[in-house]
Image (cartoon, rainbow, N blue to C red):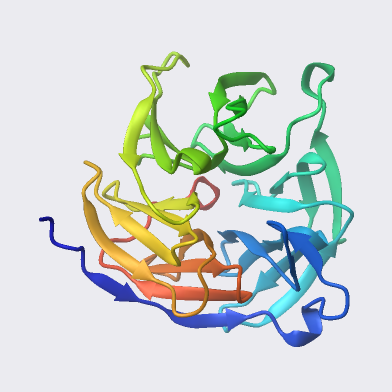
Length: 299
């Protein structure tokens, strides 16, 4: 028998205030009426944490003290959020496509919504490489019955490349520290795929890196300086920490609900993992031994 990995407990860092929750007319998310559903955690250079509230088209900024500020509300379903090294904020919106947020005016604008005249299925998450290339997932309602989810790369020069088109629910994604491998969370297959990336822009053989079990499946991910991957497991209320070889190192267990949707490393030493727990509308945190990888936005 295999020994269970050690458990790391979380604590609540912040909670959406009642005044910012839709208590009277909650909207449906994942088939259930919810007063909030947090996703897309991403830190700016000042230590503020940006998160999205999917069913209500909202973007929040959370201060280092855990104070929520509403930055924008619009007609959309914002999921992933990342900050470019020039300060621009990009949003993967399930309804509208790839968006830009003007944080000062609280407005969003469409950057890309109809590539080659066809609408996206429904964008989910995104990340930047050091080169400025943007990788993002087009999940829609794809699953094992309809494995047509897609992985795109928007080159820094504006060229859009379709990398994968056969994914049963592509979700979160991370790049290894040397950016030679992209790990892709495939929710409905309950797996993490390994996508080798070559210097000439081509890909190596794509395969399963980690096969998970239980819950609903992997969602957002974060990676540290040593290449260890933190995988949010929706339906389990856990974030699993795997080594760069794929060995389980620890289970980071939610102290609130079961919908651990996404994570980001923060604080000056980057040894604190912040986790959006969407069932309770809270942001959790856990202390880890290895610093998170420096995001491209902070270089």
